[in-house]
Length: 171
Image 1 (cartoon, rainbow, N blue to C red):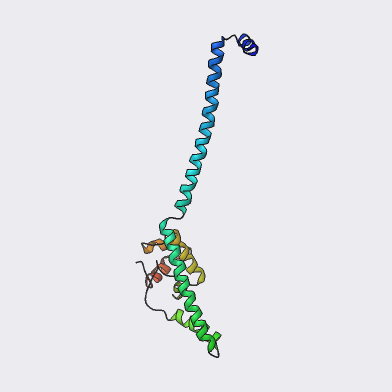
Image 2 (cartoon, rainbow, N blue to C red; image 1 turned 60 degrees about the horizontal axis):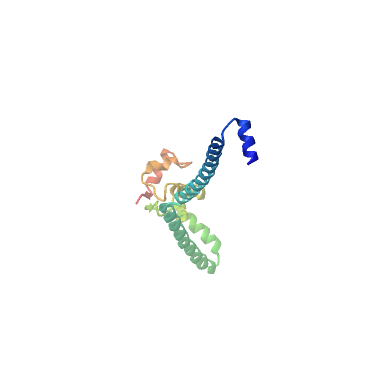
């Protein structure tokens, strides 16, 4: 108690006032600690929300569809490779077959369901452009609703857009 009395004399306060100030300081420190804990919890909640928003259902569905389509494309390529490998000039036939398919492609494909291999069959769409289109579709949530949205893709201008409209449907 001697320290308490000495402090009271130095500060010119009564014992009751020192007790009250000490209690208030204690509550202030406790409030700061609780506030810090709450802000950490809020940060954790916000991080979880951002992570779940990053992989929305549409994006996940789009990625699953792409993986499924790529698997089917790989199976087709393997079957073609086996069939062409049995022939005498398999490599030459395969190369000429792909180039003739690309030039003679007619009809339309559903852009929202097409894989990279299908996009490359369209004249004027190479591997880089096909990759850009697939990336763009993924960024749009797995589905493109209007042809004008394609203008956001690097390398697609008005002329290219009119050309692509002949081959794409947006189902």
